Amino acid sequence: MDDVKIVLERHDHRLKTLERDMSDMQAIQAEIRTMNETLVTLATELKHTNEHLNRHEQKIDAMESQPKQRLQQTVTAIIAALAGALVSTIFGVIVAV
Image 1 (spheres, rainbow, N blue to C red):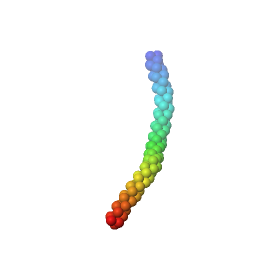
Image 2 (cartoon, rainbow, N blue to C red; image 1 turned 60 degrees about the vertical axis):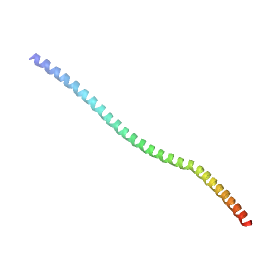
Image 3 (cartoon, one colour; image 1 turned 180 degrees about the horizontal axis):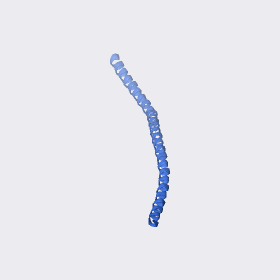
Image 4 (cartoon, one colour; image 1 turned 180 degrees about the vertical axis):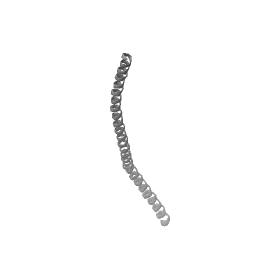
């Protein structure tokens, strides 16, 4: 009978230890769940930030390309004016002769 009591006490002690460990693990599991939710939130915010950054990069590229376009338009206008003057001069010489 004493052996049975000793075995029951050991089992009772082990059960208490397992219950305590299980309580600790439930707290850890809750913390992991919270961390997962935080990571999802951070990932979502990072995605939105990257999209915002991409829009800004596109705007900067558009702003940087405007001076190049103006320079090309100016060069084209100068070439057209010179070509027109050359054609007018040649036409004037031909008509004068």
